[in-house]
Image 1: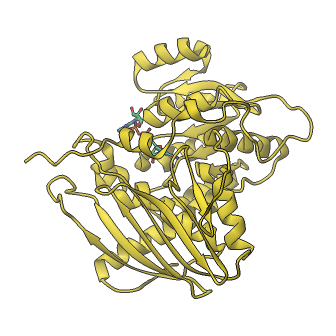
Image 2 (image 1 turned 45 degrees about the horizontal axis):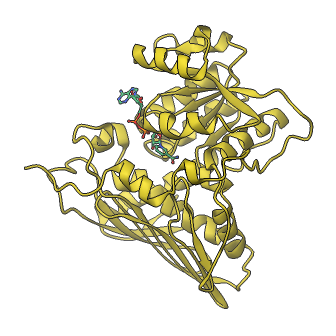
Length: 368
Ligand code: NAD
């Protein structure tokens, strides 16, 4: 039986964003400015799927510390069309077989891994071994053990590693971090957050294969809600209890559809979260002793909006990915750790691992 189709991933993202055209299209706000004008660093995108083509390559037309210097693709037609569209010289076009030759290419400073999750570890490690700094997309890897290997490989190669956590460079999100972490309204007592969309994509897509995606809505969308709770509180959770719901088991044969969880934080805040491939969610609400704040949409590419004590935040949206990549390029130039290093991806994957353990055990699981 065909699943009920409501909203496509693209439709959902469009709804939860106002679209790049409506964003501030001037130079992206780089949170880390170069102290002196440096050479723009070359970025090579590995995997030219929807995120690279729809977000990263367009954002790279607005960056000031880096530019789109190279591509890695297994599809010859994409190699031709991208090279033409973005004026990429043939010597900077790679496929998955000759990728390691990138080691000898001085045009490429940073490799950005934008592949299915199961390939993040391999390409991050190969890029670091090739002497390149790495940005790896979220979720960082299939599990925390793989994240640790990736961090170790980048350390060994003396290369910087960052995770594609674009929201850390986004002003509404930064305001939530400030309000929560600095306890502007006193201690945060409650956080509730959810992220999801109604999946109606290709039933054979890698996102529905456990071996390639590691999981379903939790890995893909829930990672934002886990991040949201962590950056609102500025603390690390110690335990989690989770349950799941499957309304379309024929469609989500291998991966989770909707997952609900409660997180225990050392400060005692009541923290609930949820992720879904069957509900259009994207909010974060926090209550503190003397006030409250919220974002909705909280996790889209643009169009984020929020309220503080019921009043609109009135903060402009930016091109998040441009700010994120510019910041990492500045980090590389200044030899400074990214604010979203591999360790940040690992922290989230430790929570994800514990949520999956809790779905199996039906009990509280320690996050270790
Ligand atoms: P996609 O399916 O559109 O693209 C994946 C790319 O990988 C395609 O170009 C595909 O050809 C290539 N690929 C290479 N080997 C493959 C294989 N064996 N099987 C399948 N594809 C293969 O996916 P996407 O939406 O671009 O996502 C890519 C990564 O980016 C994922 O890790 C995803 O979580 C992440 N992502 C992040 C954000 C964000 O906001 N940070 C948004 C979307 C996606």
